[in-house]
Length: 178
Length: 167
Image (cartoon, rainbow over all chains, first blue to last red; front, side, top):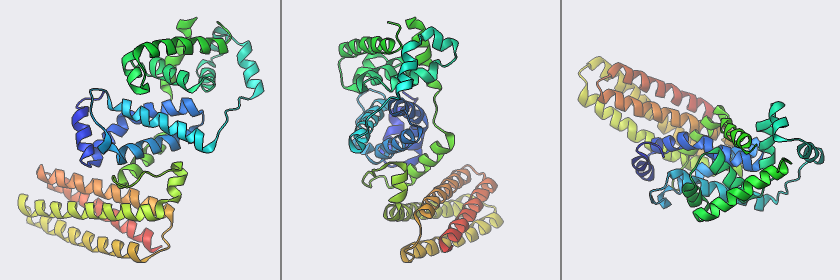
């Protein structure tokens, strides 16, 4: 949560573009990252991120402060945007066969040694199911607490903890190290 | 092993959007009508739909700018004793208002303004608004000369917009 966030949001609700600009500057990189890791395509991530903030600006009157960071609301819009994106375009994620073969035969240690860790794992995150993607990104990349993650995902904290356990297990399984 | 995995995940935080994209996206969003219905179809889709939407946004931005100019004019008249500067500022103020009138007329009567130009115009209008808002703030702080330069900059932007529309 940014300093004076409640006040900034109230100003944005009153239509002050500068205030919304502050919110944009603070949260756009993480929303972009969230979307990019889910769609694995830079231009699509840019389009969707733009749409998320455009929707947020136009619907900010609907935002009600409940003690959670403004980012929770943005993540909810982002998740819906990604779901709609796949629903409308009926995109099926097809992983290239050779890419799968590479992943299955490499261990995390090898990936690190080859200095391919980040890029490779980014690709693998794209292969997880949407719930596992969400929890991996929010808990382990963006460092949200289980409580904040639960709020964003509309789940209980217990469900988030179970989900993160399964997500990590799945990630390791794909990496062939479990 | 899990520690290594978590460490790599943390490194993902280095993923950042392209700064040029972020700047343009922000300007387009802030230049859009807050109460307008949400657009669909992504960044390129939005570009394609700006003909009607863009004109509406421009009208709104124009009104906003006009208000700022009037306020700025008020400040110039009431808070500074530097008569020469006030005269110049008022002169520019008047020329901006004339230019705004022309822009509004052209937008209302010229149907073939392409969407790419509308995007540029929106960005330029936002820049002009920012300059005028800053001018208003500076003059209230007694920084007349800096304020004057901001108004001059806004005037240059309006001339640029005018040229874009007349192309």
